[in-house]
Image 1: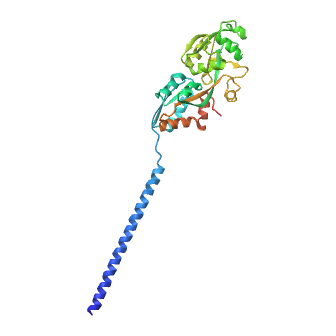
Image 2: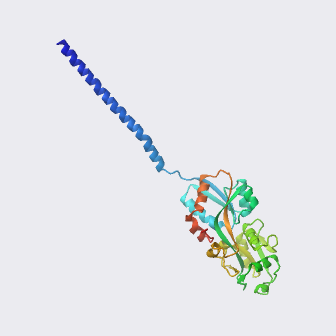
Image 3: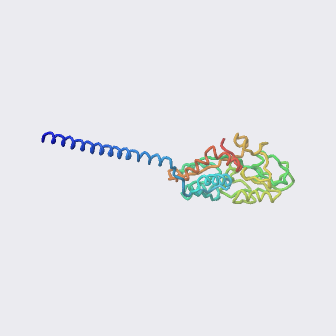
Length: 296
């Protein structure tokens, strides 16, 4: 009888131990499953949450790109409210210098970089094209000029408008200041570098347009995107400055609009994103509506 009781007690004790161990194994397995699930859930949450761009982007340079860059900035900041993009219209020379010296995240130039500038560690990235319009006062009867005639008018070889089919009046050339991308573009294309006879040299495209508008004998040059009905843009060799003629190359006085960056400089994510946006297909309408010409 004592043996039977001892056997029964042993069986009960073994059953209790088995139940406890089974329960502990189940709990341990459950804890492991939860631990394994937690990192996956966190990873999924991290993937779903995109970190918003933030910070400042400083740009500056060519006054000719003001409308285009202003359109870029407005659209980009609307999509990225935590980014502040600034633009200082100081001329192409200042934009190139700012990029070189690191005072600007992105310089803006309305001409291609010169060989020596590129060799100094700068990169130029074209984001749009522009025709440089030759403008005269609205009272001037001249409608078309050849490159040779424009060269003669600019250098003083032609001194009276009657020599090119206009009124009997003296020729007055108004242009941009030294270092201007518009001036550099006009002079290099027309082949009148260091030979122009300027009556006035002004530090903005708007200033040139206003001066030509106020003087019946004046002519000058301005970015196609800036020309208003206060002056008249003449055709060059029979070709008007338009988006189509600039893109296909038939309009002879044209130039690129260029982002200038310093090679090897650490660029912020916001600055990179701004340039990528401006170079994307989404920016084409902004460029066009601002009066410049998209690349394609």
